[in-house]
Image (cartoon, rainbow, N blue to C red; front, side, top):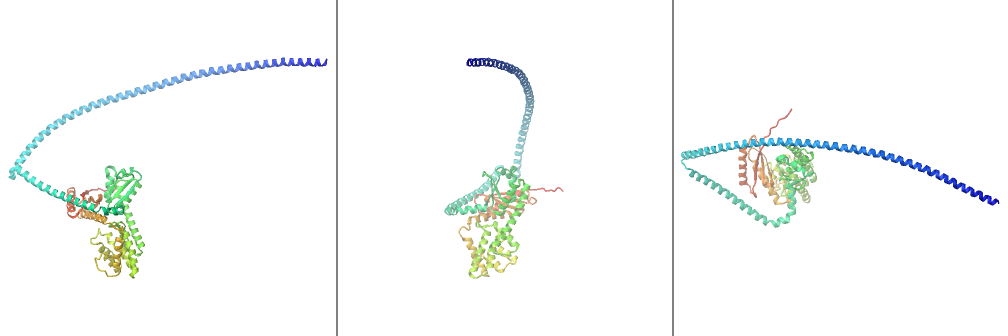
Amino acid sequence: MDTLLVVAVALGAAVGGAILGALVRSFWASQTIKAATAEARRIEAEARARQKELILEAKDEKLRLQREAEEEARARRGELSALESRLLQRDEQLDQRTDMLEQRDRKLLERERELDKTREELAKAHGEQVTALERVSGMSAEDARGILIEAVREEAEHDAVKLARAIERSAREEAQDKARDIVITAMQRVAAEHTAEHTVSVVHLPSDEMKGRIIGREGRNIRALEQATGIDLIIDDTPETVILSGFDPVRREIARIAITKLIADGRIHPGRIEEVVAKARAEVDVVMRQAGEQAAYDAGVPGLPADIINTLGRLKFRTSYGQNVLNHVVETSHLAAIIAAEIGADVQVAKMGGLLHDIGKAVDHEVEGPHAAIGASIALRHNLSPKVINAIAAHHQEVEYTCLEAPIVQIADAISASRPGARGEAMDTYVKRLEDLQAIAESFGGVERSFAVQAGREVRILVRPEEIDDLTASRLARDIVKKIEEQLTYPGQIKVTVIRETRAVEYAK
């Protein structure tokens, strides 16, 4: 009985719980539906508001685009109007120019008629002049023409003889060149090095644009450099390179230093070029003095006078048969000292004699006479030892030996000069010809300076404008050409350029 009661109670409780759960679920579902409905209404309201905003933005964008299009159309109409105005002005200008050309054509026609009339008058006057000349000279025009033709014929024959001689000389030189081919081939490497060292210097540029600045407007900078230094500047298609060509190594070194300074400074014009070349020349003087001091130190000859040191340093830029003279005299000094020590002679005298035996070559282009005699006179002027003076004067046997050291210096000189690769005949002959070319040019009055350039194919002569006028400059060029033809033997032809330059200088104070 109790069990049935319990079961009935449990069953009732379960039915009541189910009914209560159903009621709770129904209430919760109702609340959820209400919340979802409210959310849907809110989203729908937001969507309608956003739709209105997008419609307003689209209308604003449309208005903006319409305004921009209208402004662009107005600007285009303005440009077309301006272009139309310019075209109308151009038409008017062309009409005016056409009128001017027509007027010029009419003037030219009138001028041509006047010229025709003047030609007729000149022809008539010429005929009258010929008649008057025939009457005064007693000679017909045919006779005068014959005399003139004869003079021209003689001049042509003279020129033909000169041309024949030039051809003959060229053929002879060509044959000699072919005969030397084997020797040249054997010496090619050494000769090429000597030639490059003694006749050409190379200046490297930061860029190829610097070539135009070195040349200058219408070539004024390169002409100023060549006139100030006497060196030929070769500017070709070699990248970032300027070649300095000239037989005088001192001038070439001055030109190299000057160009290097100008490139570093950046200011390149004729006035600046002259200033920098003067400074470079002073620097080269310092270099030569230092070279003389170093040579005396290397040779072990202390206590030489300052003038002797400076003159000795000039040999740094002097060559003899392709051999650097300063290196040669130092080598001769060492050889002479060794020989003197072996035979018991005065080593110090032999050293000094060997070092100074070619010092005359430093000034032989300024003083007349053989370089041995010039060097001896320099040593005598500075009160050097009589043995040293005799060693200098006698090293080419132009005077008698008076001491044992003199033949020692001569022997050492011969050893240094005759060793393999020391010298080359062609270089010295070439330099001597260029020096003779300059000497001929400078032998005329009014010549200030002369420079042999283009490997001796041209000589440029600077004259003093207060002494040489334009007409005299032309006559001077012809006179120099005649003297060169008479006194020098040279291949090809030599161009003679006489430069007369007038400068006006004032100072603002």
